[in-house]
Amino acid sequence: MEKKKIGPVTLLKDSYLRLLAEFDNFRKRKEKEVLIAKELILKEFFIDIIPVLENFNRALFHSQLDNNFQSLKKGLEIIYNQLKSILEKYGLKEYSLLGKDFDPKYAEAVGYVETDKVPPDKIVEEVGKGYLYRDYVLKPAQVIVSKEKQNPSEG
Image (cartoon, rainbow, N blue to C red; front, side, top):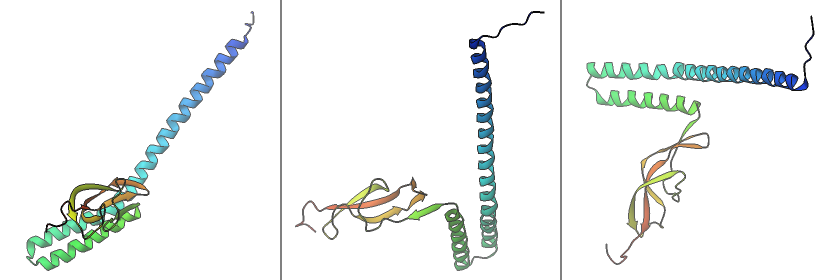
């Protein structure tokens, strides 16, 4: 039986195909690891958030039995603080820009108010809070911004 000679091109092609297969396996393994990590983070988040859901359920149940709105308000405040604490644990930060200069990176102007009491481009009212995850703006604050009064003699 004759032994076939293997040329350099065949060796390079074989090495290339093996390397390609290894890389494909590596890519699949990393995709699976990322998926598992996401699932573990979500699992931990859900474990933390379930008590908030249960407290809302209890508050709704007790509100049907008792028409004491002060008690309901206090319960909702407790649940709100519990939820806010959990979200902060996961990196969500609420921010306020009231009284600061308008910055379109962090705020969305939903209206303007003419005034001579505040310098132009200052945030005079917040319609909605802004939220950050680390340094990424998830939701810009919705704000009312001051602008210079057009006719200072009026008003």
